[in-house]
Length: 139
Image 1 (tube, rainbow, N blue to C red):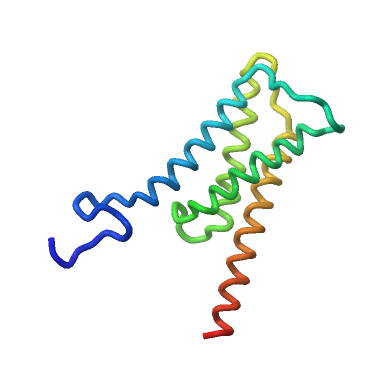
Image 2 (cartoon, rainbow, N blue to C red):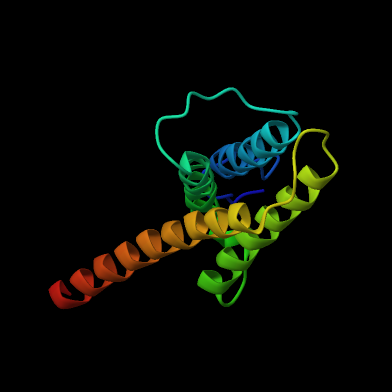
């Protein structure tokens, strides 16, 4: 098949290794969140009040960054889509915890989770906008 090439991948199969790696890492992160949520309790040394909320925020900040890295999944309004996808996973995570012995569904955990996703969206899309603005001024 001369003249047809897949971008960044195996020409014969049309597989794009970088895309598969990005999707794989996102999948592993989602399954990691599921695994942690399925534990009856997680060991932690109390360092300060409400430290679990910070852990939730950081966990979903990382997940949000991975969603932003994979934002080509979404068509159209990517910022809104990434934010809603992160919220949906956080909500499913909290609902899942309601059925795990020793865990509970907590709206403040959901708020911390979504805050992490929103922070990731803010960081990524703001930096992209700045970079595009700089390119436009140069060009």
